[in-house]
Amino acid sequence: YECSPGTAAPKGAESCGECVKGRYSDGTLAACTACGVGYDTRGNASSLLADCRRICTKGTYGEFGLSSSTASPCAFCAPGSEAPGNYTESCSECLSGTFSRGRGLDAECQNCPAGSFSGGNASLCVDCAPGTYAADDGAAACD
Image (cartoon, rainbow, N blue to C red; front, side, top):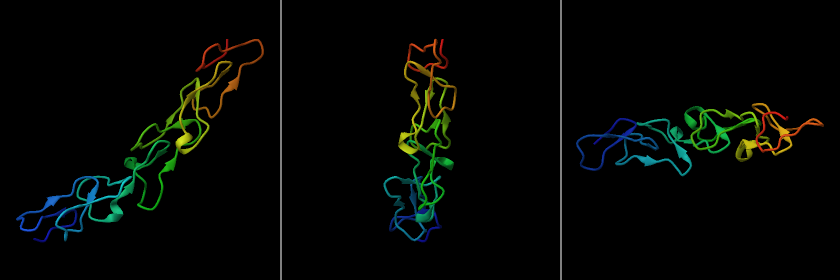
């Protein structure tokens, strides 16, 4: 049985079934083929291996949470922001009292240590001025 791209039919089937997200078929296959580990498609009915994109993991982002092509990596979050999990479409700015200095896996917002503070979207913490102090971690200002 001949199917259209993005679908497949087992031998002897009388109709084609749509490939689910993460699988593809050019229409000549008996079953949809899974993308490799760490790859996914943007939606159902993918027809080409090139439709399989890298899954954006912690510290990276991309449209639909996937890379722009099979061969390209996802974009890194900038210092002062984070993408805490997989399939992230954009990075989140670090809140006041937190910072993120790294890129990729190191792009995780962490509390500023006692004795320092930060405003939002910070890539580092600032030491409190003489005569002031932040007693707790995660301070947005010194008293």
